Each structure stands twice: as structure tokens, then as C-alpha cells.
Image 1 (spheres, rainbow, N blue to C red):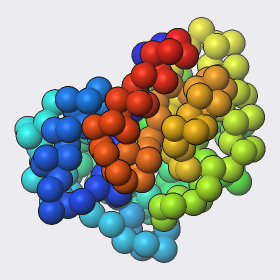
Image 2 (cartoon, rainbow, N blue to C red):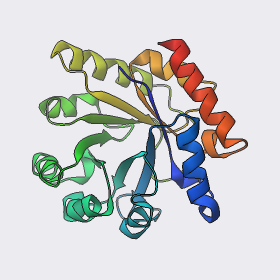
Image 3 (cartoon, rainbow, N blue to C red):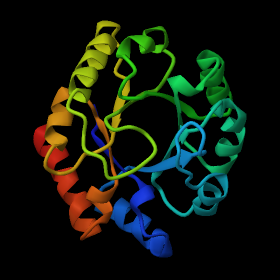
Amino acid sequence: MERILAPSILSADFKVLGEQMELCEKSGAKYLHFDVMDGMFVKNLSFGVPVLASIQGHTGLVMDVHLMIEEPIRYAEAFANAGADILTVHYEACENLQETVDKIHACGMKAGITIKPDTPVDVLMPYLDQAEMFLIMSVEPGKGGQKFIPESLEKIRTLRALLEERGLHTDIEVDGGIGLDNVKTVLDAGANVIVAGSAVFKGDLSENVSEFVRIFEEDE
């Protein structure tokens, strides 16, 4: 499966966001991870539809939008119009997850389903053939700078095995506490889409992205 780096712009410098997006793309990133927080499902607030709309058409990166909000079905159409390519919603935040996934597809986007660290992988079993991507949170959602939760590796392995048993080659994305020092372990567990924030945007952005890509290619 293709291995993809998804830099999280939660860690970007918004004064030069356009330049940083361009550097990410030129250095080998494929996705741009866009974290949306509502202050209810998680304590923090972040950006939303207007920021996504403002960068629409200014990059070739796939817009990978992660909604940490209550009842995300309410905003599926707005994010589609703003340029989201993949819309990932939390299992824990949806009253009717199937209806939410169907709405995302109806709006022309790929659907992602994510679970918090304390939520067991088993809850995803009814939806294994419903989503184009599953996101394993390896930190508590809602704030950056946390350490990777080691138990996440077993969840990734379990999910990959469940998908393979059904002949599904669905993307598994992992978000939280991933850097150059531990990304290989995450890939080896079965993930293929890696979200990284400070590990990309702190220091030399181009060099950081290139090093992630080198590890991806070396480990294939």
C-alpha cells in the first residue's frame, strides 16, 4: 500500500501557511491534515470551514479533514464545498454513524472513521467496508505535543488483520506523537497514512518531510 505523509497544519506557521504548504508538497507529502475542534467534543477550539475554503485550489495536496466535533453530519456539505477530499469523523461523536458516513459519500468525499485511544477497535467491525480510511488516535484528541500511546500499535495490528481477513486494503491513518524516531514502528504495525505536526513544522520543514518520505520508501 502507498505510504503517505499528512502534515498537520495545527503546527504550521499561519503567517506563511502558503509557503509551508508548497514546501510540504515539493518535499514529498501527499496529504494536508486539517484538525477541526469545536470546544465541545474536545476542549480546544481550532479553525474551520473559512480557513479550508481560503486554501482551496492553492495546493495539489489532498485535503484530509479530521472533525473533532459533535454531530459532524451537520457540516458535511459545508466542508465538501470548502474543498475537503477526505472527511474523518469520530465514532464517539455521531448519534448515527452509518447515516453520517452515507452523507459524506453523498457529498462526494471519501469517508474516514476514527476512534479515541480508550475506544476498542471492535466498534469498527460493522463499518469495515463502509469507509475509505480508518484513523487510530495515538494520543487523546484535542491538543498537540502529547506522547505516543504504545498500546496504539496493537490496535493498528488488530485493525489491519480485520481488514485483511475481509480482503480490504483500506488506509489506516495514525495521528499523535509520531516523529522520525518512531514512525517505522507505526508503519510496521500496519499503518500507511502518517499524521505529523511538530515533527514536520519544527526546524527545517523540507528536510523533515524528505526524511519521513525516505523512511517510508526504505521500509517498503
